[in-house]
Image (tube, rainbow, N blue to C red; front, side, top):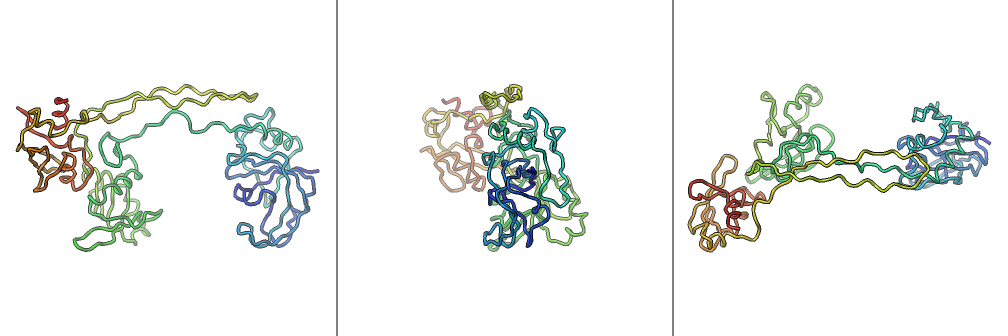
Length: 397
């Protein structure tokens, strides 16, 4: 009786967990060596897992099937389980090598090293290895993964960007902001985003018509130089470079710098903090296997946004308290422009000839439809200086 490590993959095992096969019109030499009762360890190299140990239950043969996953002619042997691992997290080979009492002959250093197949599907192993793996599989308990402390490193400047609370530090953040603000930037929608050059195609509004524009996203515009220096890429059309920072004044393509094109600075520059703790580690399991101790997670300070003012107080309440007066002027600064509105006797806001029920609705009208907390944008003159309505409402609460 012989024992083998079969190097295969998880999809093949899930399609036919009772077969080992290879596309072929005749039985290959390594298949001919198999005998009933031979031991098989099913090793999936890409995922570094073992799905189980098995016994060969048939002689090698060639089959022709209509199975979509095994269509055509295949050399196969039927296998029966000895110790079958539980999906979807099959036995992690790295964890197994650490926890086995004795190292395996095929991995003597307790490390996953490359196995030279030399065109073969089956790698001979020892009977001791087969028995050790078969004995280990029923006791396997997956080690907890990805449940440590939160990683809040690498964040950009704190701000109100609509889609995000921090300025982007990568190309992914630029894409997210562009999609969120593209109508403000004059684009109707995206036709596609892809892996290739240029990254995307967007529909730009041009008066009564629309035009297709090809867009390349970069965190910094200077990263576009790699495409300028690529002869193949220079052959393709690219209409815009969309970036967070434009540090490429000689860029041959028009640059849309989101940092200056979207309104993102918070009215209040103070940054309140709150202490939070990482999720608790899972309760220890009773096991004879060595347990890897983890250091307790430290509390981390994370910025959060402060509520602008007590809720429930309206402009009408401020009129009744004498904090505001009918006909009083309000101002809103945005993108270098100043907008003015007027407080009405019923507590509504008159802006640009239209009446709005709340400061937020009036602020959204001033900011081209962007979602707006008007209380932290509109200001009124209070005795000696211009103050935010949020501060006035707070003093009124």
